[in-house]
Image (tube, rainbow, N blue to C red; front, side, top):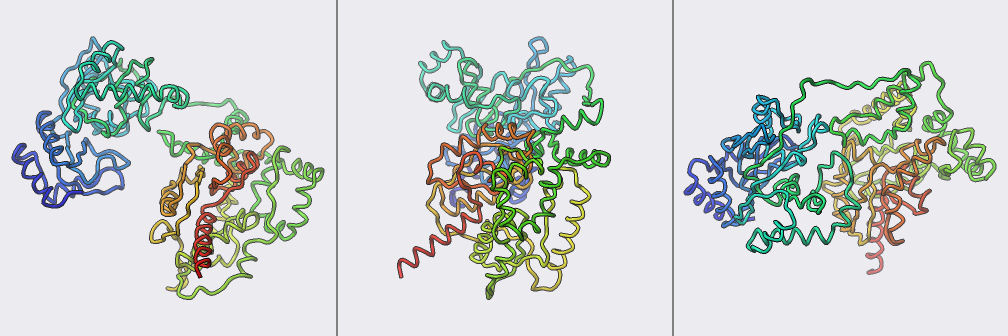
Length: 605
């Protein structure tokens, strides 16, 4: 980060060269500090170049002054791509011309500030269109679409921005300017032989391609909407060493786009909506039966379709006139019978662990014979908490809401949470009455019962929070204001799919970073157990197959000293039952760090 005087000198040089295109005033900094996302970063200054040559000159001056730069179109990015502590070049104001449109060749050459709809409107005069149409098509720019490989609801018609990019004119930060696109073997040899900066870049890309080609072919997912990461597969020989398409989606991290030659396709004469129908309710039920209700579709699908909610709503109506399966009582209503069963945990566990009785119990409960039934803890968490509770003088109280599974099956997780909260300066208190979130009820369409439980939760916790000024706080974010002691261990992390879908894993990442642990995040989707899904005899093979895609092989390949971390109860069951590896919850990991620190201190005394 440069000093104030450095940026003042930069302002002087830019203004001298570009005049009124340069804005280092507070008003422009405030406007360009935000975009469509929630991120806020104050820029060093703003430049609105009146043409491509001004843009190139501005980059040259920034490079000479070692100032970071950032291109910006409409600012429609949702993840902070167009805000940063850098010199922001807004190309949408002036660099927005369609340079050429060839209806016969089916392509157009545009400046990066051209708005998507402007190109589409011009192409429609010839019965053509630019296929990608993100929801921001009325204002997003082609440069931005190239940067993040935009798709849109109709990309299946003719592909993403990547498939519709033929060539790019690019500018490197150090001032090299040239066109890139598909490159034949002879062209590649000629470029490298010519030397210079371009030759060096192509040689480095070739070396990268040759080094990782086999891995790219084996591991790059073959899906239509792959828009994250670098498109290294476009450098493969079978893809024509297409540097332009390799740059699509790089978010300006490799080069800056000066112009783009894009493909135009025939515009559909009519637009239609496809509605999938089913002849009866039994066919719809079968179609939904293999939905894991993992909610990945809610976050990963471009339409954000929440199939888990659709499935729960359908089952609620379906079972108004149809009997629920046995599993609905054993798994779906586990929150109702588990408190009673835990009082006789020795008896229940004896039945579940005895071969003949266990098989009978599984059959009665609608559980696959291949699965192990979870073992009840000898004593519930609430009883342990009441017996061990001691005063935490000066600590702010916080309500610890323990779910059915931590309460009756894994109280060690809740105990770890209590200990970590104390270290963070909080005294854990429990709701006056045991509360069940009702989550398993959704899997069997018990929406009315789930609503009743939610109302009970709101009444109970709401009254406790609002009772007096010294009442417990409702939510604690440990990732802010709490620094755990270091833990020098290798951690293999599997994130719970509902957590990823609904509010993300940022908090976990912050805490693991603060621990100083060597965390490796498994690039997997749902574990496959998905609540009660994997215990169903009809789903058990699907459940295991899902786990075997990525998660389970990754666990098996980890050495025995590596800690396996996951927060989901069903994830824990899938991993432990299929690999034999024991799993830790994040609360237990933090507890380990505090206990290790205490041991070190004790040894020094």
